[in-house]
Length: 49
View 1 (tube, one colour):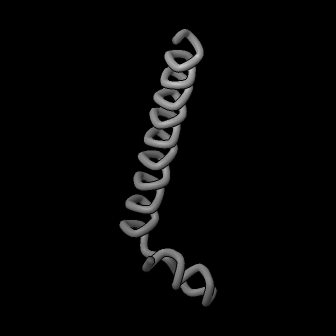
View 2 (cartoon, one colour):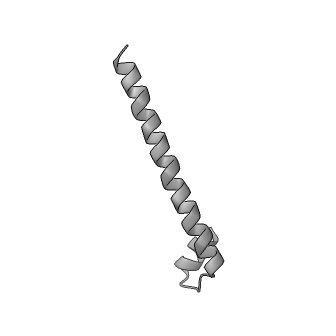
């Protein structure tokens, strides 16, 4: 939220906030990937029944 506010208002973003934002974005991508793999696996299971 802080990163978004600062970006939206074209304010300087502290390095620590940038690092946290990047880490959160990477974690989000990983979770989305794991979720998609889970959904795909569940669809395959349902197709085989």
